[in-house]
Image 1 (cartoon, rainbow, N blue to C red):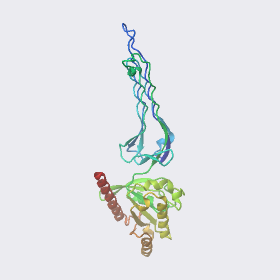
Image 2: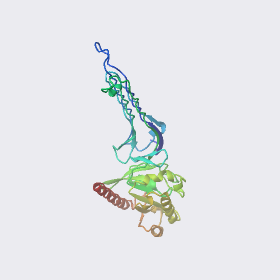
Image 3: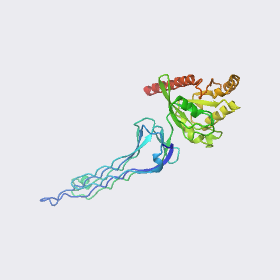
Image 4: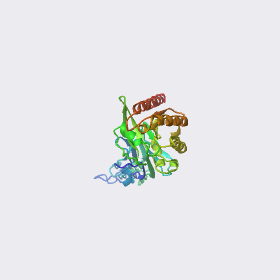
Length: 340
């Protein structure tokens, strides 16, 4: 299934059915009273957060969604039927945004979450509802209320517990493939990953979701390369694993390039917990590992984890450390939810 994380859609709720003007006409009752029924309600357009989806590809080929109109009222005090609601099924992590591209209408973060995007028009009143002691034969009725129309943006931000960051060819896809059952494309050239990949990582009978984000380059926060399009996918993560290719000459510059892009991008990325790993250590001598780890530690002011995604050296300990941070975040969120 092709990955698509942004789509623009047009929605319109259904008009309400018109009220009816009718009078009771039966044998021996030639001048019966008013009996026009009310119109039915138009269908609403509703967004529902469902499981089993991880792309917005369905909204690329169909962009217009219109709910049906309510049925008109009828004689004999028969009200029109209300139209069925139109439900848009969206993956977890979808943000629904106004046409201005900034105002967030809804943020779908939980399975089963429902948001009414456009309420159906109310049905009109039939003449039976206008009957009074002074007006025994009213001919008044009201038309149904028109439905609401609007253009909206759908933007998907992957719901992952952890995110992989690094320059192109830093070994992120290899790391994801080695630690989960995900099968990302792997090759020895930059930009192999052209779309985010999710994998479930198992460590000590526990699991968490890890996202492999396409490699960032300088200027990513301004849309250079693939960066701006995919940085948003790690905003929801609990921790970032920053992989630095140990085989390149200047590992400090590589680290600082990514950190600079995170800071310029804004949001909360620059302040998120981060683990720094010197990858591809299987291709380095012990002296090179020592020197490059020391340089990275000085630049990042963090512990540096020498690893090799290919051989598996050092991978298990860093996964356990990631699991600790993720569990601590979950406990904190549970405490906040309980307090509120």
